[in-house]
Picture (cartoon, rainbow, N blue to C red):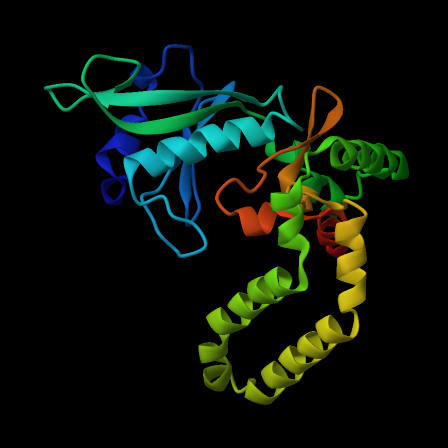
Length: 259
């Protein structure tokens, strides 16, 4: 598998790459990033991808979104999100942090936690207590109250903006419905959604007027919460798409309740 990874990621699997002691180095890969697990610290490198809803296609954009990831996640997880580090390459083709040479990539440095501390794992093992959920609820409520809002952010709660996001989801999946034999069900669900939005458009206006559209988390599910130093810690906020993050706080709560 290593030979299929970019040269940078291959070199990051070596202990000598890091300015601190490391354990057994692991690599976690998603469709948008690589995460290097070194023991005490984790390093996330964004893939040079453009999926429409996110664009990491240039070095400047990856730097921008690394900085945004740090800024946004330090709101709820300052103990996890530490820094954005430039990665350079020298004349010998060796990569390194803060070294001489051309900057070719950026990494978000985080503290590493164990898989057993993920709330998804804890939930599956029956280890989440009611008190844990109540504490998290209080934390999220305070977070939403303190999150910024203004005229620009409030605009993302309009019916037109919400419908645009909903429609983009349908447009991205419609081509698969005939293949799966679900065209009838697809149209029924889309019709229900369209009718619901029209029927309850006053609700969305009211939420805007009440100042409930905030800079939220945008991806609040059990896989993005962990126990760290004995406390619930919410991480991996959406940094790459404002439409996902600038929303009603109820969206954050509903996403978690759905889990």
